[in-house]
Image (cartoon, rainbow, N blue to C red; front, side, top):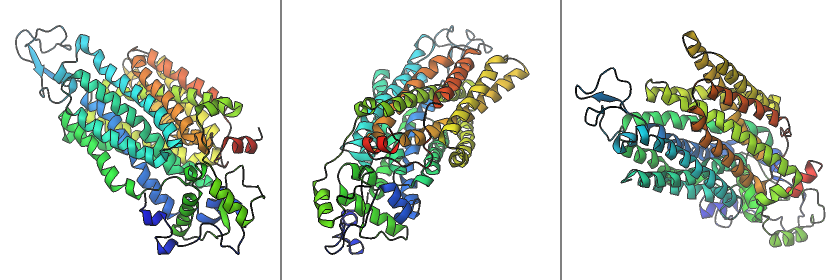
Length: 526
C-alpha cells in the first residue's frame, strides 16, 4: 500500500492532475482496464514487476504454513534399550514400554512428544486432513471478502495477521487437542493467502503478459518449500520450527504490505473511480508512459457507451456510481458461468488428488527427509518453466488437457508395473513424471480460473475452485494408504478424467478480463 499522499493527488505534487478532465476538455476516450494498460500504461513495466514480485512473496508464506507438518509431524528414528528389543525389529508397536526410545528425544516431533504411534497413528493423518479442511473453509470465506468489502489487499493483510498469530500459538500447544485446533485455524487463514495474492498480483498485468506472470507465481511456492527444508534442518525442535516458520509472516506485514497497492479492477467495480484512475496514472508514470487527461476508465459493459462522453455528464455519472457486487449465487444463476464453475471445481479437485497424493510419497522414501523435500520442490520448477513458455503459444485449454493426460498416462504405467526389482525404479520414475505433469496443471489452473470469471465474482469463483482442491488434498492421504498399485490407478483415472472435462472449457488466450457478469455475457456472445 502506498502512503496517503501517494493515493491523494492533492497531497503529492508529482501527481497533481485532475482525475476528471478539466472544464474545457471533454472525455475523449473511455476504456476498460485491459485496453488502458495496452494503449497507455504498459502491460508489464517496472510498476507491475515490483508489485508482482512483492505480492507473490506471500506464496512462500503459504508454503511454510502448509508444508511445516511434514517435519513437525514426522515419525523420528528410534533405538532399542534392552534385551526385550531385537535390533532387527522393524516396528515398535509390539515392544514393551521402556525397551526402546526415540533416538533424538521427544522434542523433535509431535509424534514423539505425544506418542502418536500404532493405534494412535491416525491422529497424525487427522491433523493433516483437518488442516486442509480449514483451508477449504478459509478459501471460500476470504474469496468472498476479497471480492466485497475487504478487497484483495485487505483480505491478504487479514490472513497474514492470522497466520502469524496462529502459527506462533501452535508452538505453545500443551496437548494434542489444542494443537489440532490451532492447525485447523491456521488452515482457515492459509486458505486465503494464495488466492488473494494471485489475484492481486495478476489483475494489474496486461492481457498478453498475464498468462506468463500468473504461471510464475508458483516459483515462489516451490522456493518456499525449499527454504522450509533448510529452516527445518536448522531448527530441529517442532515448537521452535513453528515459530521460525511464522516469523516471515510478520516480516511480510511490516516490510512488504505497506508498499502494495489495491487492485485497480477492484476499485473500479466497487465504484471507487477516483482511486482507480489515480492508480492508473501512477502505473503509467512509473512505466515511463503518459495517460492523457481525457482518457477515463469504464466497465467493460460501458466501454462503448457514448451517452456520457460529455464531461459534465461523466462527472455526474462518476460521482453517483455505486459498487457492483457479486457472489457465488450470481455465478450459479448464469448458465455460462455455472458450467464454467462446475468444470473448474471438478478439475481442481481431481488435480489436487494427484498432486498431493504423489507428493505424500516423500515420507515413504525412507531417505533423508530434508533432502527429499528440497529435491521434490526443485523438481517442480521445470514444469512451471515449460508451461509458462508454452502457455501463450498453444493456449490454456490445450495445455491443460495435455498436462493432465501426461500425468495420467505415467500414473497408469506406474499402476501396471510390479513393485520389485528394477520395476521399483520404473514406478518411481513414473511417479516423478506424474507429479511433473500435474505440477504444470496445478500452476496453469490458477491463471485459467481467474480468466474464466469477471472481476465482481473472480475471487469467489477462485475460492470455490480452491475449496475443491483442498477437498482433493483431504482425500489424497486416504488414497495413498491403499498401497500397492491402487494409488497409481486412482491417480491415472483422475488425470485422464480431468483432461476430458477440460475439453468443455472455453479458450481464454488473449481475451479480456471482464469486469461484470453482463460484460462477459455480451463479450462472449451469450
